[in-house]
Amino acid sequence: VPCIAAHAVHLDAREMELLSTREVTLVHNPSSNMKLGSGVAPVCEQLACGIPVALGTDGAASNNALDIYREMRLAAFLAKGTALDASALPAATVLRMATETGMKAMGFPDSGRIEAGAKADLQILDTGDLSLCPLGDPLSAIVYSADSCAVESLMIDGRMLMHKRELLTLDEERIRYEAVKSARFITDRTTG
Image (cartoon, rainbow, N blue to C red; front, side, top):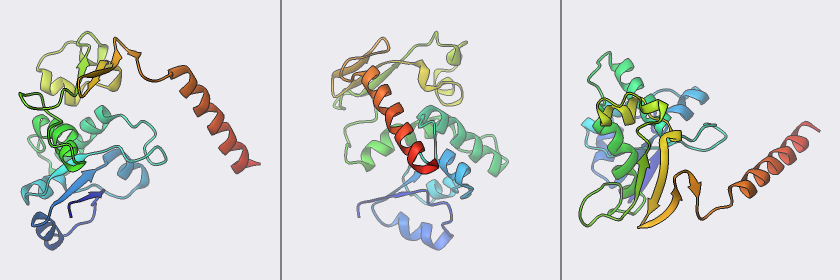
């Protein structure tokens, strides 16, 4: 400890009680767990035990999209559906899981929130994006409606990495080329 434990789908009450006394953050990966047929993590129970739960996407092999916005929506819907309770895992809790809780677990306690003294890490969403239109309640819109295409700018520690959907530090064309080349290489080796 401190420790980050991914998935944690099949914890019993005794295990959750034990984890609540340690510096352990669980990472809920709903798309990955659903794709692999692993089950649904009892996130509401984990949180009720006092265990910090962050939100993750896992890897490309078990979650093709790697879209934290999809994960927020799915996490909220799974919790509500399994609890048969529309108030289970509210939007504010899900957003905190996707931001502040995960950043703290990864060793960045001054990130994941917008307030004095926090790192200048932020995403700027285009509220005119179709996934956010009409906007209504911004918090609900971010968790239940937005997708990653709504992100128009990204700043990390005060440094703009993407501005108005233009990557400023990475060569997107080169990355796409290398990804396609690598995928073809893997496909050729596994099917040949």
